[in-house]
Every structure is written in C-alpha cells, then in structure tokens.
Length: 282
Image (cartoon, rainbow, N blue to C red):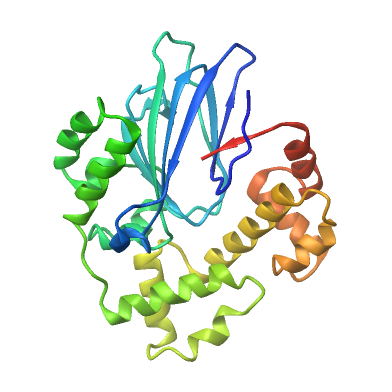
C-alpha cells in the first residue's frame, strides 16, 4: 500500500509484507508559527519501513516513538536534518512486533532559526540530536507527547515552540525574504536581488548560512530541483524539456546532470518510478 502525498521530502517504502499505515497531516494552527512551521505529520501503523530523504529546502525534525529509525547504524529517538543538497538514506528497520509511531515537524528553510540560537549550518553534516537544539527539556516533551493523539501532539508541540520563539530582527527578515524569493522564483537570479539589500554581499552570504544553513547558490540548486520534482510527480505527462525550463535550468543537459546528482536517477527514470509506483512522502 503506497500513497501519493504532497510536499514530499521523506519517502517511505514498505516491504512486500502486509502493512497498514496511517498518515496524519496538519498545518500549524497558531498564526505566529505559519511563516516558520510548514506542517506536522504523523505516521503510525504496522509494517517495515525503508527510508530515504531527497534533497530539500525544509528542515525536518523527527520524534520517533517506536525507535525503529536508524541513522549511521544508530537508533534515532529525536533528530533534526537541515537543508540538504544530497539524498540521505536511513538503514531499514528490522522486522519487529512494535507498531510504527513517528511524529515529524517540517520547518520552513529559515523556520528553525527563530526557536534556537544554534547556527543552522551546524545541521549541514548530518542528523543532529533534538536535545542539541532544544536542550534537556525535550526529554520531558517527548514523554508528554508519546501517549497523545496526533491533534493533541500538534497542540502541545506548538506550545513548546511558542515558548522559544524569538521574533527576527529586521536584518534577519531580509535574509528570510531573500530565501522566500529564491524558492518562489527559481527562474530568476538571486544575485540581482542582492544589490537591493542594505547589506554587503559578504554579510548576506554569512547570514544566509547562519539562518538557512547553506550557501545561496546551493539553496538555489535545491530549489530548482524541488520545483522539477514537484512538476514531474504532479504533471507526469508534461514534457521534460518544459519541466527543465519551468524549474529554471539553463539547458536540458544541466537539468539531467543536476537531477541525477541529487537523486541517483535521471528525470525520465524518476518519472517512470512515480507513475508505476504510488509513493508515500512526508
């Protein structure tokens, strides 16, 4: 059983064994969180999961209540992954009698930065334990969340975030707006937009890494890839040459080489995979 769901960044594939997964999705309810939290997701039920994360712009936070997720051979209880320019694979969880129970928070590209003082580039080397971001109070939150329903988990986690929220300074907001502009206009040139900002190019690049976690050029590369991936999955009949143009690639060869580097397969093969297998993404 597979599902095709929007906003994909983590693809879950189960084995050939019978499985019953439940998928829960919610946008943030508090208006203050809307610019910083993209969505909440819960995956629960029975089955064996195989996980991989494509390159994406959002920062993902996992609370794994069944502790059946492994990264670099180690079980993950809580963990964060920042903006990524490469695909990350999690080792398959072994068959167990324990039911799956995984709760995700997807932050916008700069969203996490308003809830912690940790520079976002520190998330660029792989998964970081949730305690390193939120401190020891996360242990108590984990225990409080575990017995709750999905809706109650969302409400409690929102309360947790609101207590840690720090409104961005004007200079920070400039960087946030730049990231939004790049993400929403992948055909444009962000370097033209830099000239309109009251900061030096060096300051902009340094602050971009501090609050987004990566360089502007890499952010643009992933933004174009995300746009292409959404077009291929959502409009499988569209010509790949049109996809390349709409995603802001200079030419078809650049599109193919970039897509292969970020997924391991060509755009054509990726489209065939999307059309022949219904995929679950969270």
